[in-house]
Image 1 (tube, rainbow over the protein chains, first blue to last red):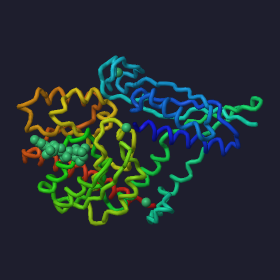
Image 2 (image 1 turned 30 degrees about the vertical axis):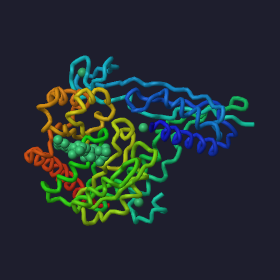
Image 3 (image 1 turned 135 degrees about the vertical axis):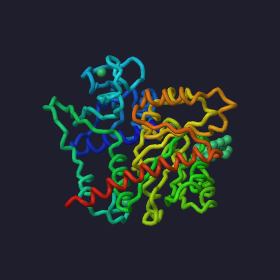
Image 4 (image 1 turned 180 degrees about the vertical axis):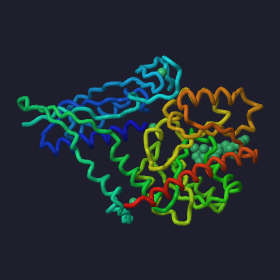
Length: 115
Length: 260
Ligand SMILES: Nc1nc2c(ncn2[C@@H]2O[C@H](COP(=O)(O)OP(=O)(O)OP(=O)(O)O)[C@@H](O)[C@H]2O)c(=O)[nH]1
Ligand SMILES: [Mg+2]
Ligand SMILES: [Zn+2]
Ligand SMILES: [Zn+2]
Ligand SMILES: [Zn+2]
């Protein structure tokens, strides 16, 4: 259940950004979670609902985008979203690939409120 | 945070970790009393900064650090207990467990320097916990520092603890399907040790299938079959660490040769 630690880091970030921007509330928190980031979206949601209660995130909506695994092939240049979890190019089978998405855990956007 | 720890890291590389401002932050025009702030911010960036700090710490002492991860009971502590018979390298261990200092005690009984971190309810180590422990280790007298993570194939994979390489263990009784079931962990591995290979005759575990599963997730990973009861396999383990350490030391040497 490291989702709880991750969400508490997220809420911390939201609080800092709200303070920097002198906001009085947060209406929406948008995150991007890679399908292979190692966190379970449902647990992130539960953790967020639990932790947002006593801070500036109270009442904030969590918007979660799940990013699929995306590969760029260095051998044939193909960009692909493989349908199974395999780190090789579906077009040419090369293992010389670069991961361009699917492993990230990012805060993307905040909707800040002002009184 | 390094002001608080009292450690004397002064290099420029170290300082710049701290002014990771929100300069990449873009603000959209005002809409009444709401404002949309677009940021692209790693959720675990505080941990990542601390991890980079730990790595610098290790490097300043000329120590290479390895993060050992596996499910509970795959043989992490046993491997560290036995490794001392096969290597001349001096190593110490940072142990992470939910409860007890049993693993650290086992290693100390073998004359290995070990510090226990009790994580309480946390199912993984993070860079802050490792930082607290690394200050208790006599790093100047060491070549390698092992971080034995909490036994768990899920959570530790999300945290950079400031080590240089990841070692993931999977034991024969667990079954080779664990690799496909926990892809994030095996994706992180620089080397996978298939442990308890002396038990292969009793289980339907095919090391070749396991190896293929690892390579599918991680084309660069090495896979080594290990049993603490088979000295040849332990020599191969020691050899892998020796090779890694030699490469690490070459990189360190070339870094320090460069004019500042
Ligand atoms: N047969 C056999 N048993 C082994 C081997 N390596 C470890 N074991 C046994 O596996 C059990 C668990 O080993 P540990 O070293 O405590 O495992 P661990 O990964 O450190 O466990 P946690 O720290 O609790 O996650 C012990 O009973 C060991 O004796 C091996 O190579 N062969
Ligand atoms: Mg152990
Ligand atoms: Zn967990
Ligand atoms: Zn290709
Ligand atoms: Zn420090």
